Length: 445
Ligand code: GDP
Image (cartoon, rainbow, N blue to C red; front, side, top):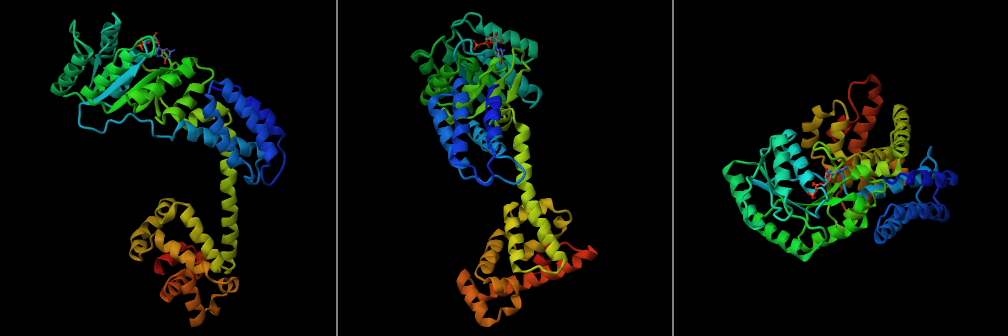
C-alpha cells in the first residue's frame, strides 16, 4: 500500500532543517507531497482535504523535540493522523458478546470475495476462538454459490446449512437461525446474495434479512482493488442497511490502498478484517498503526520521535533526582513530581510501573490519595509565590490563609501539602540508604 509515499516524503523532509518550531512554509511543502501521494493512491478528495487540514493544524508551530529533525517530526504527525483516520487500534474485533447463536451477516457485491471471506471467518472462529459455527448461503441467484460454501465447509470441517431447493433467502435465514439454536451453535454466518452492481433489489433483500436475523454484526465485504467504487458501495450499504464493519478483500494485490483510508473516514465504520489471499487462512485483523506504518514505510522514524520525546521527560527526571540527592527538594520539585504522576496515568498507572509500590497500595488508598487529591495538591502549590515554594518555612498562618483562599481550599489542605513535602524531602535524603521509595512520603501525608 502507498509504496511511494515514504520515498516522496523522504525527499521533501530531508530538506527541512530549521530548528525550534516547524514553519508554515516547511509544512506546506510537505503537505503538497502528502496530498499528491494520497490522491494517486485513490483516496477520495474530501478525505484528503480534511486529512491535510488536520495534519497542517497540528504541524505548524509544533515544537521539534531535541535529537530529531523537523522532517522526522512531520512524519510522526502524519503517521498519527493516518492512524486516527484509519480508526483506533482494537476497535476492529468481531463482537461475539451476545446470547448465542450470534448472527453475523455478510453483504457485498458478487465476486467481492464474500463466500471466501465467510469461510475464512468461520475457520478463524472455529480454530482460534473455539466457537461452534454454522454457515448458511442465502445466495439463490448464483447457481454454484451454495455448493461453493458447502465445499469450503467440508474442507474446513465446518457445518453448512443443508441446501433446500426453491427456498427464498428470507426463508433460508429463518431456517439457519432455528438450526443454529437447536444445534447449540455459538455463531451463525449468513452469506447473503450479491449482485454484479449495487441495485435496489439487493438492498431491500439485505434489509429484509437483517430484520429477520437481527444480526450482531453486519459486515460489508468489499474488494480493495475497486478503490472509489468500494467506498461508494460502503457508503450506500451503511446508509441503507447499516453496517457494523467492513472486511476488505484482495489487500494482497492492492498497491495503492486508498480504499482503506477512505472507507473508515466516509462510513465511520471500522475495517474489521482484511483478506490477503485466496486460501482460507489468509485473513488478518486490521491494525491501523501497522497499516499507517506500512503506508509511510517509516516505522523507525515514528519510534525514534517517540523515544526522543520520552527522553526529555527522562532528562527532567534525572535533574530532579540530582537535586533531591543534594537535599534541594523544594515545593517546585514536588509539583513537578505530582504533574509527572498525573501524566503517567495517575496513581493507579504509577502503581503498575514502580517496583515495590504495589505493596504500598493499601496504605496509599487509606490515605485517600486518589487523582483528585493530587490535583488539589498541585492547586495549593500553584497559589504559592516562588519564594514560598523555595522556602516553605516562610509559610506562617496568614500566608497559609492566602494560599488556601487562592486555591479555593481550606488551610488544612495547605498543611497537608507541607507535611507531605517534609516527608518526601526526608525520604529523598534517606534514599541513599535505599530502604524506602519516595512514595512512602506521600503515603504518610
Ligand atoms: P463472492 O462472489 O463475493 O462470494 O466471491 P468469492 O468468495 O467467490 O471470491 C471471488 C474470487 O476472489 C475467488 O477466486 C477468491 O479466491 C478470490 N478472493 C477472495 N478473497 C481474496 C483475497 O483476499 N485475496 C485474493 N487474492 N483473492 C481473494
